[in-house]
Amino acid sequence: MKSIKKLSAIFIAALALTACQDETSTVGSSLVTEQTEIIIDSTFTATATTLLDPVVQSRTITQLLGCLDAKEYGAFSSDFVCQFLPSLSLETEGVAVEDIDSTKLIMFMMPGDFTGDSLVPMGIDVFPLIKQLPYPIYSNFSPEGYYDKSKKLGSTIYTAHAMYNDSINSLSFRSFNVTLPKELGQNLYNAYLQDSSMFALPDKFTELFPGLYVTTSFGSGRVINISETRINIYYRQHAKVTVNDVEKDTIYNKVRSYFAVTPEVITNNNISLTLSDKLTALANQGEALLVAPAGMESQIIFPTPVLIETYKKGVGNLSVLNALSFEIPVTLLTNEYGIEPPADVLLILAKDKEKFFAENKIADNITSFTAQYNSTKHSYSFTAMRDYLMEMLKKDTLTPEDYTFLLVPVGIDTEENTNYGSTVSYITTISPYVQKPAMVQLDMKNAKIKMTYTRQYSK
Image (cartoon, rainbow, N blue to C red):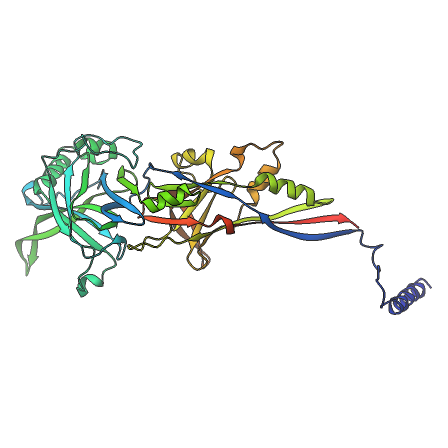
């Protein structure tokens, strides 16, 4: 009988629903007492102003060399000082000091990794450092007093073009060689024979060989990005070989890269940038700009108080903050050298910037965020800011330092990890931007802040 009653109830309900289908129905209201909805609010605005950023701490082995004067960008120049990490062991069997016949400084550049004119001839001079480089070291460092002008080690003239030579064009890199005195290689080799422990620790080796100062001797119109720097030793090795049971003396001609610029030692780009009148005028008009290296960054006042107020007003009995994103469109600044926007930027609370770089931190998506330049949309997008707002919601009161951010050009290094056929790329270092000249104007009027949350409330 119970089952018959249930069927009857269902049948009667079905009839009632059919009879009332032309009217507003509240069927189910007694069963569902809560209702949920997703709110997407993008009515928020952020403001930005330009700040001068004339000094950055170099935390990369990328070396900038050259100078150019771009009317729209400004007058830029960079040379560099560097230490070298030695090889732990040098080949000694069958090799005497007098077998070292030449020493060369080799600087490598990826194809096309330069700004300016590829064909203009420019000169390079190389000098020895005569005392230890300071640490920390910054982009406004002056090498005066750290090198000996009277003891130039070598020089060369170069372009950034392969000159349509097939053997060069097929390589994955370009190299620029400066012949150094063979005595430099001989002295370093002799020091190794006398006390190889000097080569075991970078600090000990820099006492023996403080490093080099590399600068432009003449020419203008190009800045190259040197991705790797080595000192090669060329030498002869004496050995015995057996041919048809007869032992004979033989000589092998060899070359070894015994010294290299690495992250373990100090290298610094000594940068000078005089901003163009155009950029200065835009900044004075209130436009937000990014100019690098060591040029301009932008201070952004994020509307955190308004976001929190809106969220708290909109929530019901239960709410969940789903997402917070910030997209900044940009305006390209035309120029004769094809200077582009920085490839990567860091959005960070202003109070944390110095500590972030000093401690080699990685963006945590709470107080710091990274974004890549999207060349299709012409924008930077920060899509993972939810945790930042969650932290701000915990505060009883907010102060300006909780929502004053800096947008800073940076260099980002990544590594890939492959597990079970899936490759994941992750960030290993974030450093102040010194890659090459870059500039862009932020379009803050069209910037979009989007907050998404789900709320539940009683009907």
